[in-house]
Image (cartoon, rainbow, N blue to C red; front, side):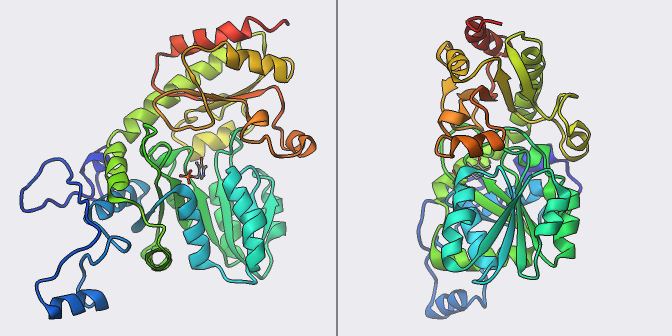
Length: 392
Ligand SMILES: *Cc1c(COP(=O)(O)O)cnc(C)c1O
């Protein structure tokens, strides 16, 4: 299926029909598989003959989801996990040992930051956090012990971009592997492996499902690297439920059409926000005012569905906008067909000290919108109600 477009792969890749020739992908809710003889059981268990044994290792529905996502990321292989964090943990456990060092881009997802900053250090794995956009800092942070570079692009909530091709070159020169958390763009908008990354990591909970129903995650890359992750997963057990894999498999069918529509709406909303007198600044990679607009055009198919903006004032003014909404959901989640609105300084980034938050650019006046599939006019009206309460 190498020559097919991503739109086609999204609905056609990973189909293996059963004896019933079902058209829509079947859901195999089974934890184990039976064998026709003792000899077959022995051959399957030893790996001499390929086939399903137990759902902690493989399940046909999970395999279908993995094949479809691998096709979309243009990856040789993919392994699904119980959540996005399970994907990150499994990758780290598979590839690193005590004494190894990791370079991480600042502004990664909160739990990722906790994992690299506080948990792995207890096991002798040290991490250095570098500013996402500072290529010299990535280079300077590498040591002979560095095994992994881990980045997220665009960052949350400021939409800073990591130059994936440039960081891949730095990582490879240091003899390390580059893993990219591609959650915000999804393969519909960005394919990190084509830019030189070695692994793509997903929280499938977000855009891949796309409708806020299930948790899931995935790691995509070369067969050699993904096999290492699978070896850890089948032993340690953070495997995905076949039901969740089926939801995500079907979610992938509409991924591109959703991302295109949500990105187009986000661009329109970002342009509108930039013209409002109560708005100080808009952070959106699809706007020429974004400091990395040119990189965004090279690296992503569009600006994505997430827009952040700063209102004139501080927390009281930002909260006015949140509290005046009637349509959007006040929640920290993203990647849903329903638009969500977040005040990062008092929620997702609330536990960081005010000084560290300020240094990271997460101001009290900042709001993040993860644009869904509602009419953009309704979204504008929803935000306009609160903006009108801010005196300028
Ligand atoms: C949500 C998220 C994760 C974690 O995914 P879960 O499925 O919640 O475990 C990792 N990275 C990013 C960028 C996310 O947004």
